Image (cartoon, rainbow, N blue to C red; front, side, top):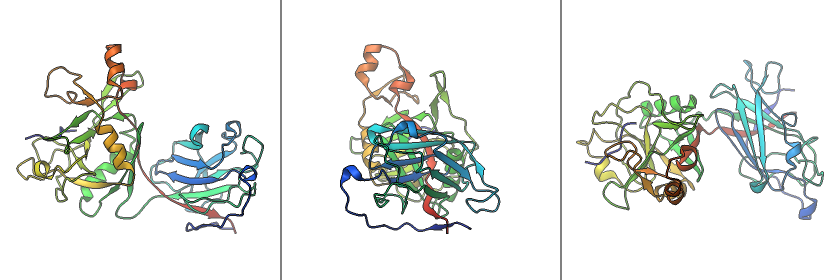
Length: 354
């Protein structure tokens, strides 16, 4: 049967929407329209006007971890090393943080005195919540926001790929051991720089999986194995229907380690069968636009990189089959469908200083 391979004191306020003044678009101060943060210190912001990239630097963009007192903007906070990058084409500011412990609370400051649009208009740093338009079109005022770990039963994991983000609501209730295992690997950054090594159709085009987690691309552009911890107990219960994520394993029901797969179609007939390795443990569901990203990856053409199935690489999706064939040699960094980062999304709120 076909199956996947192994593999003073500031206060954080809830988000709210502020009415915008009617201003001509050319006069509007640049402001942030959306914020996404994760539990390892990556922050992604979008702005409604292009910023001058020369004003986005380590002086104007700062990130601090909260110290032992758990309170932002106090003396025990630690300034973290960051690399801010602003991409004008999509008006996106990405902050990469170095040395932050996973699940640490941290806060971010964008300096309105230093960050400007190309015409010199200062950033309007008012912030009312992720995903809503912010500010009142008046330049000035730092953006201050705090990012905290999601302590709920369904934290969201974000798979960042070349084709877009796949957000997955994890199910701690029905698969606690599997989710804990997933969080362990994600918090180690084990899956940063990995790739989808297998697309399998499991009996028809309306079914199938895309699988990853077991292999990455090294700094010298070689395919390498991702380290594996001890196998975990099978927690099969929820069905392998479209848009779910499950653990890959061998014939042994309790053999899952670091490999996972997305169910592109309804694979319940094959993968819920208790005679097939005890059934495959589903531990989350794709939310929002991630389904379209999953489908785009599943639609890519595949190659046999080993020449002799069965193997981990006899059904490997590639970004551009024609380019690979013309080149005649695999370039892992170019050809393979990379997963840039897997991390858990944080909760974001405005940081108000009374």
